[in-house]
Each structure stands twice: as structure tokens, then as C-alpha cells.
Image (cartoon, rainbow, N blue to C red):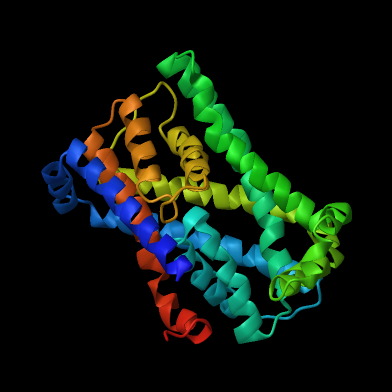
Length: 320
């Protein structure tokens, strides 16, 4: 019951934030932009988003193989789609761990190995986003806003640093895990604790494949940047800031991602990340209504892409 109340609160807050944003930027202007959207450029954005999915699924595959777990790539991709779909409706996008649940319950991959295959690459991914996102924050604070309280912009960076640090400790520090050994005596939580201990026994595979993971993170970053670029172009946005325009989207994605991972009473940062997009685009001279439309398109095109995972998700979490 408590979980349902929290979920309902998250939905209400998210809808309220989006409603406020639409009111301030002009709902009619957003609708006008939606009617004029370039469908071909939107398709290109969705295509590059799918390429990101392929890269993320391949990262999982190489780690599973190193842990002697054989799973078809298509089945990994289907599990990944389940996680991505769940991530679009959960605070801090924690629903992505449904990928591990899909691999365990549908394809019999041990839970600890499934989690390692997700945890490992995400540490590298978050670390890169933290670095470039922080650079982006300093650029905005120093060259655009020039405010004394620029440090406020670093809240997202601090949150992501905490997440990365915790993930590293969970995956590699035996001493850190032992601090929570009392969980062994608590029903249900004891199973999660035991799985975490088993995860550390397979953590060496992340180190052995670190070079390949970093290469894949880099390739995925390029595809994600292109997906954002074409999404912006599909709604008619052009950014002129003295550098090649594509670089704006290279730094945009970690900035917005950091806000999505700030613990808030929203659904995967819905409303919060849209507000960040409107602010960032406005700082670079873009129309607020077009920026809002971009934010909504960028979010819901991924949901649309991953909707085919609904039947797969229902096999794991049947509606009761």
C-alpha cells in the first residue's frame, strides 16, 4: 500500500511539473511545433537510439560470456528493452534493473551474474557522464550565467558521484559489504545481501573487460549524441555557440542525465529533466516552446521504441 502511495505521489508531481512547464512556455506553441515536426529526422533519432540499445546489450553479452554464461544476443536485447521500458516509469530510472530480472526468470541467468553485467558497464558510463557533465556545468556557470552561487548546479554531479562510489563499493569492496552483514538475519533482504556477496565473486570480469567496455561506452556516447541532435533538428532547433553544433548535444546528455538521477519524487526525472532542457536551450538562445517539445520528444521516443517489450515484461511481472 505504501509503495502505491509513493508511486501515485511521483506521478502527480511529475504531471504537475510538466503542466507548469507547458503553461509557462505556451501550450499552444508546443502543439504548433508538434504539428510541424520533421518525421524523417525523428526517425533518424529513433534509429540512433536503437543503436545505443544494441551497444548496451553487447556490453552485457561480453561480460556474460566472460562469466561462462551463454545467452543469445536477441534474448539479451529483449531483456534490455524490458529494463529500458521500466526505467522510463521509475524514480532515478532504477527500473533498468528489471533487465537482470528478465535474464534470471526468463533465461535462467544467475542473478549475481546478470547484475554484474549491468553494474559493471554502468559504472564506466556514469563516470564518463560525470566528467563531461561537470565540465558542461562549469562552462555554463562561468561563461553564461556568471553567478556566485554556481555551486548549486553541482547538485546533480554530487548525486551521481555518490551513485558511482556506491556502485564501486558494492561491486569491489568486501569490507563495505561486511558492514551490512546484519542483513543476513532479515527476511527477503537476506537474499539480496547474499546475491551481492556472490556478485563480488564475479567482479573480476569487469576489470578484465574494462578496455572493451570503455570503447563501447564511447561508441554509445556518439550514437546518443546523434540521437539528441536529430531529435532537436526534428523540432527545428538550431544552436549557435561558437563551436560545431553537435558538441552542444555531446555535453547536453550528461547534464540532463545527472538531473534524472537526482533522487526526487518524480518518474525518472519527468518534469525535472524537461525543465533542465528548457533552461539549457534558453541559455543558448533557443525558443522555450521548441526546447520543451524537444524534451518531450527525446523522452517519449525512447518509450515508443521500447514498447514492444511489454509482452516480455508481463511474463516476468504479470498484472494481478
